[in-house]
Image (cartoon, rainbow, N blue to C red; front, top):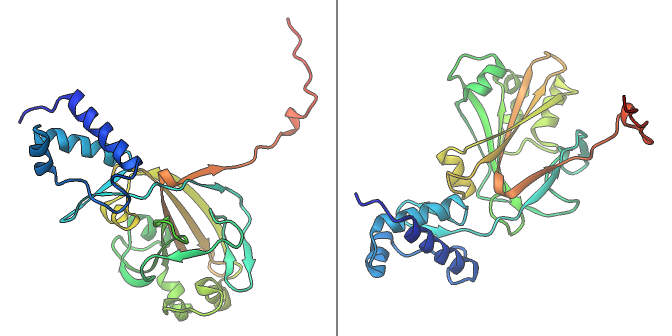
Length: 267
């Protein structure tokens, strides 16, 4: 196979990038079919492929099987102030620190659904279950109104939790959702702990979040522990594309850093 010229694919990528940015190829449109475009330009198809791969790495396009290279909506970067305070809304129940602003409407992409499936090792370990044990998962994809999918949220509910609070397995668990049903069943007050990490998405996550496989994601895992058993009863894993979020937090001075600072005497 002929190695594509670095100059040629970079030049083609720059030209296509400019056309995406000026609206020649608007969001939702597809770039020309790879081999036909190569013939049209009189260049090797590998040069076009590498240029497309570069645009995909930049999050400008996404390759969809049997559709082609689709131009993506420009990402809206949202700031999450990582507080540790959980509040409560009379209409919605518990509200965790998130990227939403007060009174900002959010939408659900597709339909939230639930299914009992083999849980990942991360979940079975927390629930102290055998690897591959089937666990109830509630899944939803949400975003601010009018924006592309912002987050994929999977909530895993332990078999013990489902046994003691069977309504959490229903499509509509009632006011306050599954958390209120868990606490009513004696697991309250639930205590939560959150951990975050950056990783690469799997194919299903990339498809659902409408991103390229080359875009890292921020994974946030919140583990809810029962006051009754002192064991985890729910694990919520939130996955957000890395190009759509930034974390923020206010730094505070410790006692040793209080102003005025004593000058350091020179020896």
